[in-house]
Length: 122
Image (cartoon, rainbow, N blue to C red; front, side, top):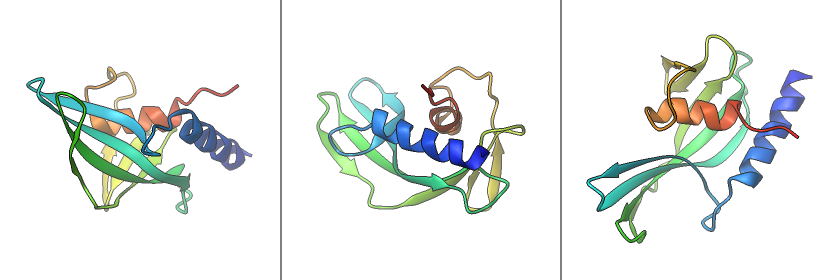
């Protein structure tokens, strides 16, 4: 039942966060006001690993101060996310614990966890 609910949440989150490019931005970092880097969810599914909830693909884009794309990373960066305690984001084979009380925007891994695990359900 939990996995079915998580699948519905992921589908709803992906649809609600869509932007023109078809990506769901979950974190943006600014550098001196003239440039920013955005991390986006390009793909997502219920995790194949039963100890995680989601498997996702992350993309990276760099923008100038006016919003024009300066660089779009062609890589497909995979991550896995566990919503329940201990909240975790796995990149490659490294597990990063998530401080669920952290403020949004402080850490991209927290923002990824939050985008998936705190998705509104109606």
